[in-house]
Image 1 (tube, rainbow, N blue to C red):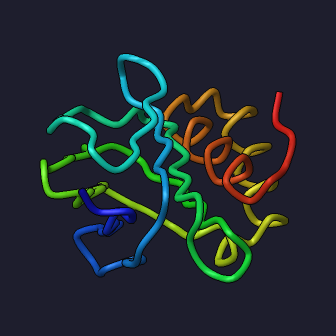
Image 2: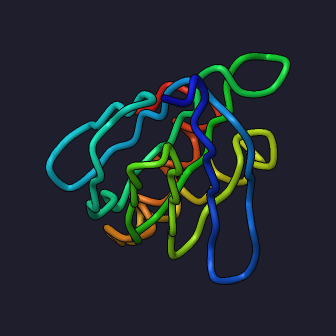
Length: 129
């Protein structure tokens, strides 16, 4: 059994991130799922406001991404694919712009934009009500 997972986060436009990690935590439509090496194969829909976390990755120990729509696929060989309609790494998120988008979405009563803005802010480590 492999000690690490190989994780890829992709959107239709590009590969957002790929690398190894110890555990993946993602929000699906059924609830939050945690995946470690040896996990059984799974295919699940991501929640519209998903934040994906890859623990044990990079020097700082974690990769976080906002992922909107799509699904997560876990193979029996320790490979995890997050295939999202849109995805953005936490460090690439402009927090001020996301806060502005949240405010505009709230004022316009735009649920889809509201969900995306909240997800982006949570991925960036911001508190969102």
